[in-house]
Image (cartoon, rainbow, N blue to C red):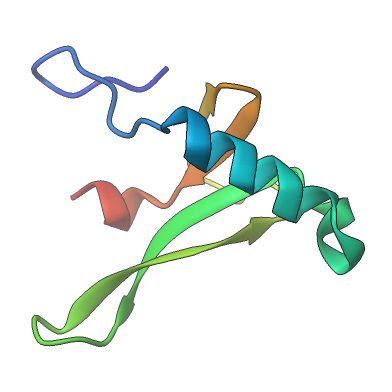
Length: 80
């Protein structure tokens, strides 16, 4: 599990969030998803906003976190 300088996970899921993610991943077109991806995109007041999407593969340089039965891939730019 990826940790911050303060020895805390970089991201945590609540039980409700994990349950909802599992439900969504099992539905229709998202059934091929292997996890969730957290990244950033240009938008919002600050010029950046977080983006969460379904992941079908791990991209190069992404960190991988597994919590509560969900795999989360984190874009390195989102960590900064």
